[in-house]
Amino acid sequence: DLSIASGKGGDLACVFTMTVLPDGTRRLLDIRSGRWTGPKILKELVDVHQRYGSLIMVESNAAQDYLAQFAGEIAALPLKKHYTGANKRDWQWGIESLGTEFEQAKWIIPCDINLVPSPEVASWIQEATTYVPNEHTGDRLMASWIARECARKSGYGQGNWALEKDVNFFDVDTLTR
Figure 1 (cartoon, rainbow, N blue to C red):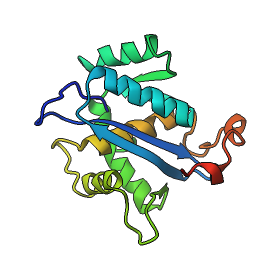
Figure 2 (cartoon, rainbow, N blue to C red; figure 1 turned 90 degrees about the horizontal axis):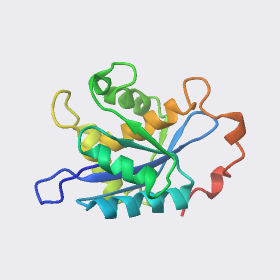
Figure 3 (tube, rainbow, N blue to C red; figure 1 turned 30 degrees about the horizontal axis):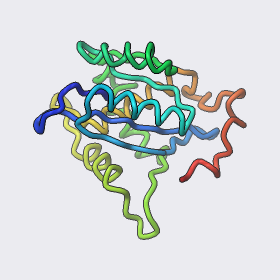
Figure 4 (cartoon, rainbow, N blue to C red; figure 1 turned 90 degrees about the vertical axis):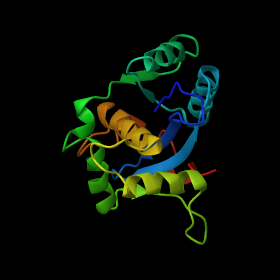
């Protein structure tokens, strides 16, 4: 979820990284956010791609499209553009569909030994639990929806979350830091 505002009142840019396990469970790997400049956003995207071999989907509405263009051309990242509009409110694949996935225990959310999540994960959980349709969607929640949509649109869809060619690409037990 890219933001071009770097001032105190501006939205956050957020990079949300997840993987889809063969049983369809989504595992949160990394969340990072900040009020970053364009070059800083590109550095974060490159770092995520190098760490995880990620496909990257970026929201590319309005001025955000410039950052998407730079990420695809200058940094040569495997980039997909995501246009947000009425799809955000879609009952089957919009933001609220994440709630269904949470209720069905389809997400593995990291925490420490005392079940306390990192500050970024805690902020994401807060944004998810306080989501109100037709109000501003939290930046981390928006980024998680875009990441889920990237997985779904890339073939990790209903009933086929693990593409056969990718099942052995990562050893699931080595995806922690």
